[in-house]
Length: 96
Image 1 (cartoon, rainbow, N blue to C red):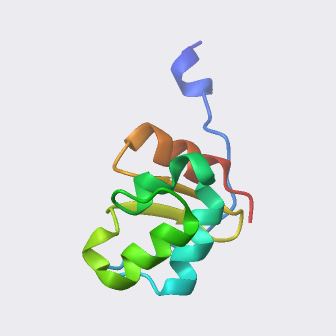
Image 2: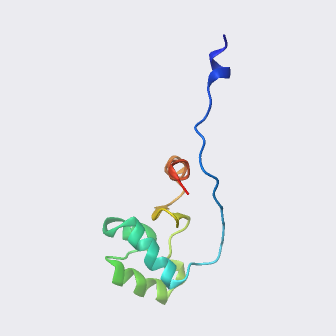
């Protein structure tokens, strides 16, 4: 028996994928900062020390927002950067 043919990938719930090049709103940034936690704020907003500093820097210039950011709005998680394995973990862990 061919073992490869018996292998099935785990099923995940369907989800909507929205890709945008527009910067997030200040409210979305605040939510993203909550999702990543205090220790990772500088991964979302360049040079930010804390949430208040991050929001100030974002309002000064949208260019301070580090891209890309993958956000799971339904499950309260966000990943900064293009780390494919982390993004896949996020997508595969999604339970809508």
